[in-house]
Image 1 (cartoon, rainbow, N blue to C red):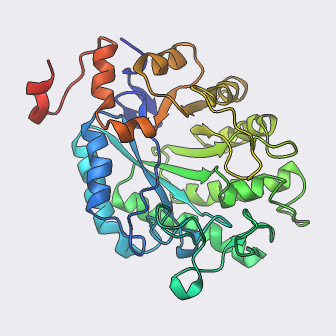
Image 2: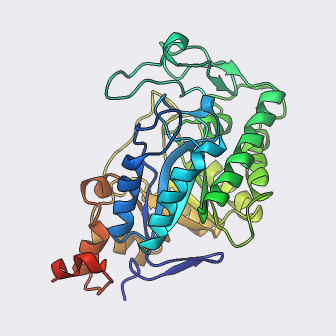
Image 3: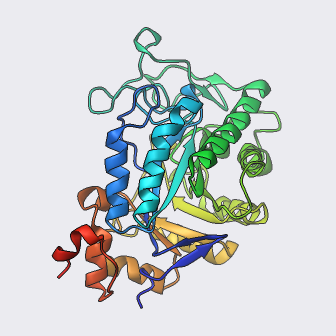
Length: 354
């Protein structure tokens, strides 16, 4: 059997294969509510054969949204539609996961295909927050540096969102600490210029993430896996880097985190990213080997044999896919054929299998 189509057990959750639908913002919500777009988008990837389907970044608070049309899980009214989606994913053989996020200074943006700018309050925008009053873009509104009360709210919001996610039926929770969003902003010395217990040293910069992990674990049953997505490097000199990522991963493992979803970048406009197939895999590999923790690889992985080779060479344990699954929701079914694996198709589609 190919490794890509071998099952993997994480805590008490078994994934039928190693293909993960990576979180992908859809910018299709009103007031954070999921709708039929999300049902079809996520559901079709479950029908298409993925082992784990993770929602787009779900905001833990209204001010935590990246855009005015982001998915949310900050109030109980969000739960019914999410439950419908979760139930459909599980009915079709995949496991449902949710990514919980706070955008920090990279928040309050317009619908991206209509405007790349932040939205004014008069048009539904809001004040953004960050570890320090430093903009991401020069034209962005100046974020408000979080005080200790604001930090406590962030932790409380992550905990409350996790509780709702579990009530809905999600089996996997992923904390988003990558791509320049709030928790990543605390990690990186480029965006964190604080002089209190949340800034300066490595130990201080990782403090909020560790406290968020602890807050989530207060409500997370022992059988449910906890993932953390990180950007392993800022791709900028003097920023968050691979060495710190390995060190953080070791600590997260000690704290009970099960998987490091390993991405890169997103924090600094001056980043220089050598984009190419597998360009981020080496970071997943170093974290897997040096921190002895399960990792996911992501980034321009588009082919079944490519994914199989990453696993066979023990560079990662899971393959997170985004754009390829946008192009082809049924990629796993076709990949199985490419790797000579006989996997179960939905009975409604079996007549097209051969």
